[in-house]
Length: 328
Ligand code: NDP
Ligand code: GDP
Image (cartoon, rainbow, N blue to C red; front, top):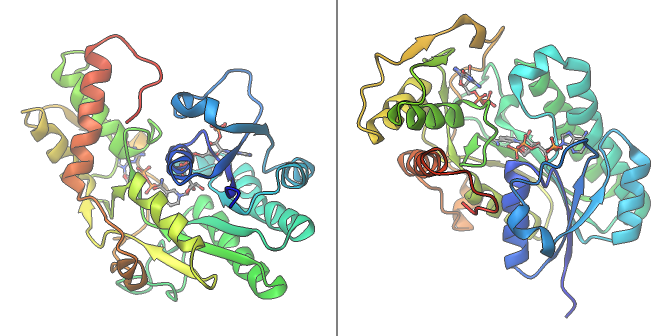
C-alpha cells in the first residue's frame, strides 16, 4: 500500500518537529508548511530536513493553503501553527486572533474545498479553561479564557467542531495541557528555568528573573503528546479529547527541581520581576487523565524526567561548542 501523506503546519516549532519525526518513523510522507522569513529557522528539523517536503505557506494567506492541499493531497493535516506565546498575545492581540483563531477557519475551509476526506487535527489548549469552571476539567467543561491567546484558541476549537458538524469533516480538537522539551521556545517558563540552572551552574549567569512562582501547571513531555495527537486521528469517529498527565506542580517547584539537579539551592539566584507577571493568569489548571487516552495506552513521562532531559540538554549545549543537527 502507498504510504500516507501528512501535512504539518508549524513544523519548525516544538510539536511540529516531534510530529514530523514520529510520522516519518511510521512511514508517512511528511509535508511541512513553513512561512517565509529572512533567516532560516530550521534548527528543530535540521536533522530530518532531507526526508521532508517543505512548502511555503502561511495561515494568514488562504490561497497558499488551498494550493498546498491541491498539489500535495495529504490524508491527514496537523494544524500545529499558531502565535503560541500567551504573554505576546497581550501585545499583539489582533495578530494572535488572525493566526491562532481565524487561521483555523482558513485551513478548514481549504480542506472543505479541496478534499473533505482529509483528517484534521486542531491544536487546542488548556488555556481555554482559564478561570476554571470545574475541577477537574474535561471535554465538556465550559471555557473561560484569560488571555487573547486563550480567546483565539476557543474560536479555533469551536470552528473545528462546527466544520465537523456542518460538513461532516473528520475534524478533531485536541485540548492539550502544557507539554515541554528541550525544543520548547526559550521564552516559556520551563525552558527558561532549565537553561538558567545550567548557565548559573556553569558560572555564566548570576540570576534568574521570573514572574508568578505560585502559578501551577500540568506539564507533560512533548513527544508523548504528538503520539496522542496522531492517535486521535486514528479513531473511528472524530471527537474532542483532553490530554494531560493529571499531575499539577507550581512554577516554584519546577525551579526547585531544576536547581536540585545541578546541586544548587535556588533561593539566592531567583528574583521576582514584575515584568514577567501577566495582566491575568489562568487558575490552577488541573485535570484527570483522559479515560479514552488511557485506553490507548498513552505513556506520559513524569515531570522530574522532563526536567532532567531539559537540564542535560542545556548542560551539554552551553558547556561545549554549539552543535548543529542535534537530536533530542
Ligand atoms: P511553537 O511556538 O513552538 O510553534 C509554532 C509554529 O507555528 C512555528 O513553526 C511557527 O513558525 C508557526 N507559525 C506561526 N505563525 C504562523 C503563520 N502565520 N503561518 C504559518 N505558520 C505559523 O508552538 P508548539 O510547538 O509549542 O505548539 C504547537 C501548537 O500547540 C500551537 O498551536 C500551540 O498553540 C498549541 N499548544 C501548545 C501547547 C504546549 O504546551 N506546547 C499546549 C496546548 C496547545 P516560525 O518557526 O516561522 O515562527
Ligand atoms: P503558558 O501556560 O502557555 O502561559 O506557558 P508559560 O511557560 O509561558 O507560563 C507558565 C506559567 O509560568 C504562567 O502561569 C506564567 O505566569 C508563569 N511564569 C512565571 N514566571 C514566568 C516567566 O518568567 N516567563 C514565563 N513565560 N512564564 C512565567
